[in-house]
Length: 225
Image (cartoon, rainbow, N blue to C red; front, side):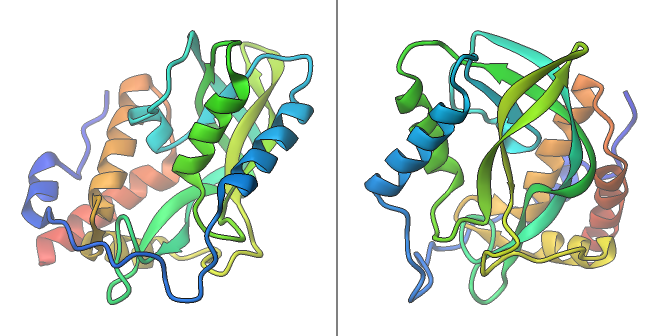
């Protein structure tokens, strides 16, 4: 396993939480009916197949759901990107942060989790409530085909929505690094989110060149503070 430049010591140096200011005024929130409809639509697309979730970021190191099997998987046409501007969770209105989603183009290696066949709708709604809050959602679920051991399997993956108000496209890595090294919210810092993601990818033997370069840049930014 390669040695990360970004370390636990870097994270400890800037670790903090900020008060949650709540939803931005005027921002419409998802409600129970919205989650139910999204779940029904996804289940319809998944008719005849098992319920599988593609993990590429925090769903790898903090899935918060039970699964019956986990395998390496690969998506074509999508890549990890810090393309969601956030003013909660790991950012504030004064110092916005960034979170990851799958953005179009490229490819992405991650984990495919197979969930139980029982209470599929309830399982999907739980995941939707974790990943989606605003309307329109930035982190939008899609049913995609992932390559798992040579088999193309349908999975739910959370992807970027270019029509969302807080979507940002193609930010240069040095700019992303400055934001992640400074932003924090009631869940902690952006740098901690990156560290958790990259360190777990390394443990699984999953390579992401952009994130590997980004963790080096974030470490340097923290050292400047």
